Length: 109
Length: 113
Image (tube, rainbow over all chains, first blue to last red; front, side, top):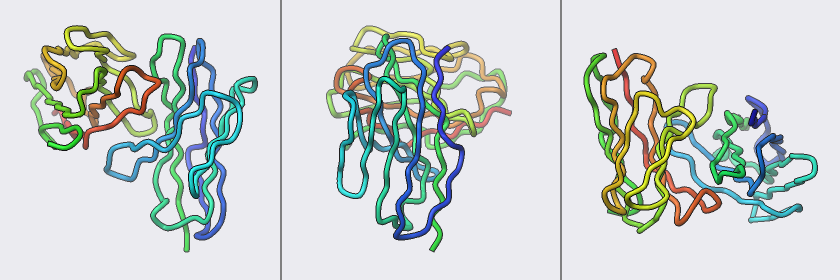
């Protein structure tokens, strides 16, 4: 079956760095997305990786290893507004998104 | 309209009633999607449409139907609502397919009693 695994909840301190991991098992693979979702709001796009390696966008970076079925989202210089759920989603061979349950990130002052 | 809108914002519905959730986008995106989001389960795809005039079934299509008469609108209908359909429903659109960024509407919170 197809599966996305990510931690349910993580806690970090304002100003610190946090890494949110995601492992995936899909029938075929056509890329991996990270979305941010604040409580009570809609998901918003953060990143898309289809090739191995690290992509950096300001305070956020995303990494992909296709051979390991693994990705992570790295958040630097954490701010209170980064408190949200982070959703990992892989595109399978049928071009459908398989979503993880999300990682709730709690930022403490 | 800017982006993607959904209506209603929330709804309480008696079991057995018929309900249509509306979704409209003004980005001229070809693909549109309906998801439900339940606590601890993440987003699950109900139905999708790759282009006007075509629709497809997602992971959890039973009890739901959709239509795509034009590019902008993608309504979701619950023919006879049941309590297990209590959820938050998100509509989304993307330019071509699932490798493109999906833009989400604000969601509809549906409670079926």
